[in-house]
Length: 387
Image 1 (spheres, rainbow, N blue to C red):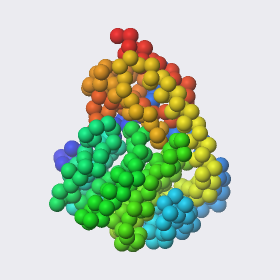
Image 2 (cartoon, rainbow, N blue to C red):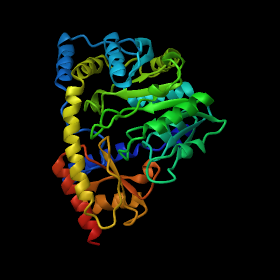
Image 3 (spheres, rainbow, N blue to C red):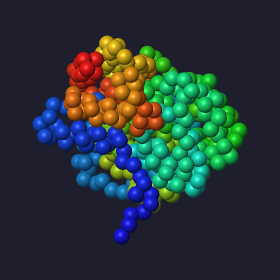
């Protein structure tokens, strides 16, 4: 008996693999500092906890409509108006079991075998494998300079086979933000050529210094139900609710209908309990997120201070998310080997840049405890600069 070709060729999620490794090493009693994770070190919003308990105490947790319960979809419509400035209807919303499922729903609905999906590098580790899962062709685009692609970098990779562009901003792993001019030109390109634009907006509220992340919808010349833009978001990052697994998509009614049909054949519906919690989170809204951003910014600044002490390190200050993507190539251009060496020699877990399509770099998270961030980066510096 042989596994399918797709199962045999599929890579394991690097970040999840490292999470498992870190947990196992800690169980063995080793002194491990995990700076590779993507999980905020914050309690969930109070209202999310209250709504969860209220639902549990009702002793009624059942199936819901495939695309989500009406109360949550109404909250998402308001969130979309408040943060994107566009009016949507519940029929434009599909609630899913995490933003990851929303992206996969989109790919299943948009991509035919052999179609090309273009996205900038560095990219989230799952993009390439998710495109392959729908038998599409991933087309990562490396920046000609720095860590942000120019419009021309993307445009050069557009062909007659391009079906979609995926853009994540603020970016995981770099923490950098694509500006309004870039997004406006990408929207124009997609509308002109009939290409889908998937906006991975999961970090769009986690920005520092009052920066505003531009919405792709604001540059569109089309109404939502004629648009080829699909926005994906969720409660995992903005509300520190990774374990609840609730994401959503905002798209035309026709795309949303297709994504709902796909979801109905995969997971039936998102958890009713998690949807109740998400209503609480969205009700609490910015009051919670602003507190988290303040703490994250302090941790970001502490990380930047420590990174500045390295002799041969290059990095760009993150403007959002809770990641930095520092260039360690002067120490070792092979990021996979360097990451493994650092785990062995220092007990510090980082994620190799090769997994994000840009080797020589390491992703270092600053969503954990501040003392762990400072201690972990110091360990790396003392080891590398002391060699």
